[in-house]
Image (cartoon, rainbow, N blue to C red; front, top):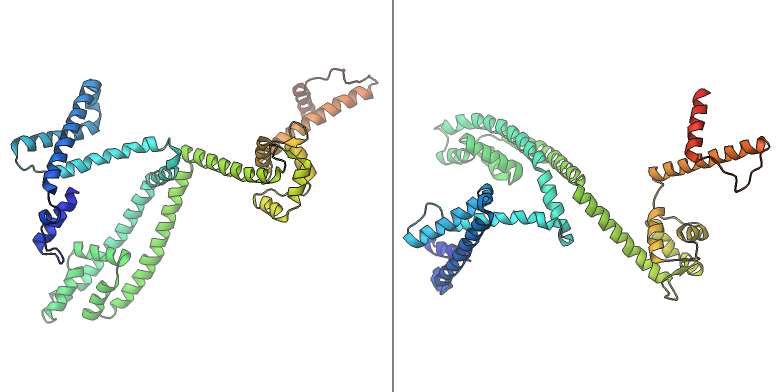
Length: 389
């Protein structure tokens, strides 16, 4: 509010169109209000600083943020006691104190409501490396072009036979290295027509080819590549962040549970909290439901086998928890871990059947109560036998 008040006063002093009244006339009593608020905040900041100094003691001097608080409180006390102007505007110091709000990002990451905010801040933090090298590369290219153009138009600027107003216009864009550098960034990132027109209309029409080629190569091709690499590197680094991976996994789990809850509520016709085989059969008769399940990477051709696979306790009905876990387990293609687990189970069954076959071939009696050697020892003997072969 104080900054807006100062802006209104400055507009009146410079005669900005539409600013016909002073800030005091526009906001009556604002100065007194600002004085009262300044005293309130000054006292609060002073008490906070004293309490931190009493509680933290020596640790107070190891936190760099505390020195900023000391500068803010000290400037307020000095300005209040002496009524003299400081070399630094106290408003700027108070604004610098707002940077401490960035420390709240550590708290934001623990609140689920701010997951998107944490994702954006992590992506921006991860983009610093790509941003730095993009700036370096683009600045070097622009520097070479700026020096080239400055030397090429230098003779025209110094030619006294040319109209002075045109030479001044060309100098405005390419007269010095700083002006030429600024113009190159303007051509690349902003409006490229005014500098181009200044060269074409005053110096030579051949500069039209330079402007078009520069816009196509630098303004389109190079910038597109830099943007693509910048975005790719940013999201690649952000995607491997542990917190973001956990957030994405948790969000996917909740979305999956919400969808399965809708399916469960629709199939539970008698509202007993369980899904029977007949209810599942009625659901699978609906082509829209089958298409919806196929969109979730769950192609079911035999609902009887689907029911048996999900009914883990074999009680003839499926609860909501069984449906959520079963569908999550059966979605998509087989995972490498699941294939390895299946292969291990198959090897165990093969070893057990070989043991049974050996006992039967030697005339030994075999019953369910006959002890069978542990699977691990059987696997070890099988590996040793394979090595001997």
